[in-house]
Length: 229
Image 1 (cartoon, rainbow, N blue to C red):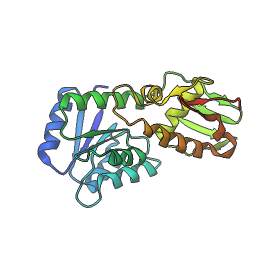
Image 2 (image 1 turned 135 degrees about the horizontal axis):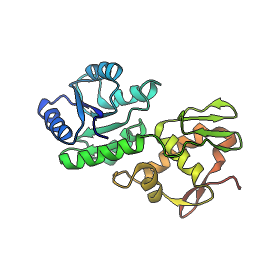
Image 3 (image 1 turned 45 degrees about the horizontal axis):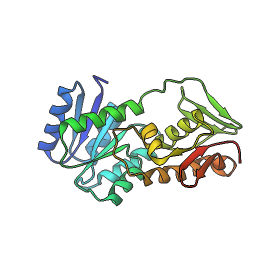
């Protein structure tokens, strides 16, 4: 983890400084931007390992920048933690739906921030397993981080990829939403359980009509990945 580049995007200099001090003490290198335009230029030029992105920014908002980054093939895999004073559940869901990996509400402690950042970087790191997993015409390759369906590339976000990878390596067992949050998002991340439903819907859509039924709803429990009807 140590030595990774973290981009701090916040229009308030004191907050950027507070975060930078905490991260540098933890061994990280920091880049700073005060608006979305500066941030995007740094992301393209410096390719940070993670982005701490404030929701409320002058001009283009943080949520719009996150949406733009997740749509771009060159930046869609860069982890994003949203920083915001907005604590309402709907705002959290909106941030996660555009592709944010975690969500921290101000005020927060530097210690909490560092812990959450480490958890996101761990999840974004390379998978231990390197053997491609195949179910029918559905193929997940951990090395190239690609999914193909009947030989054609499948479009899905990083969270849907991790969810599919977990399911394909743990077939035929039902998991609760809480268990999926622990296994896919990480136990230290505070995410609403209904967020799992959002990503399940997106995963099914990415799998298409032929393979969406592999992700099954288990009434009263949660979900399972199964080739049995």
